[in-house]
Image (cartoon, rainbow, N blue to C red; front, side):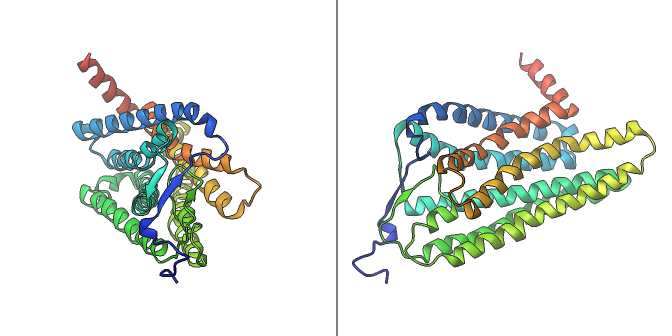
Length: 315
């Protein structure tokens, strides 16, 4: 029982996050690219938000969904990176249980919400290519707003039970977290109780949120491809596919490391060294947010033009 003298009240525990186990001597060097990418991510996505909201010509469904993605990227990197850098630079390894659970919740909440936004962006491309004449009547500002709210509500309903799942467990003194940030299974594995419920819920969440989103995205692009292949003009086909290029790059950047981390964490055993797993997990929360605004900036002509126009005025 939790009241036994052999156990510690979880609210009294201060956890120690040791960063990248096995690479402690390299923390300072690892922090340099991570800090640089974090700065680029925040500045790049903030600038993208500024351009979209200040330029009326960018008040279109595609760019409104892009602004949601940029906001999610800022939050995703900010939830984890400052604490990560504090560990690397100042050895600020301590974190309270409540703070750890809060970080866990917001990390998973933002991840699931961003997955829903990527699905919404795939739907946007599907409507734009398969029903171009009805594009603006289907994706009205009201509909886009409802999609955004639905993404937040779905993410909250999926991730909030994680808080109860870690609070229900009995903890008995193990307080070393071999990571740079708190996530669900990392906290659950410190408990003395059976964590099968946590494991099952984690798999169910992955299957019915992220994996379902991926399946629907694949279906959307399969339908887009069928429509594009029926276009007689090769130039028109390439132009239609070109509008999807940025989104496909962002999808691969977001889901590939996420699924690698998920399966490695649960089924990889000892085949993948712990420091490799943690290093990739650290890069995952900064690399996609860093590259997303760059990808859209390079591949989207309207954003390029508005950025050059804005930069010229500032100069």
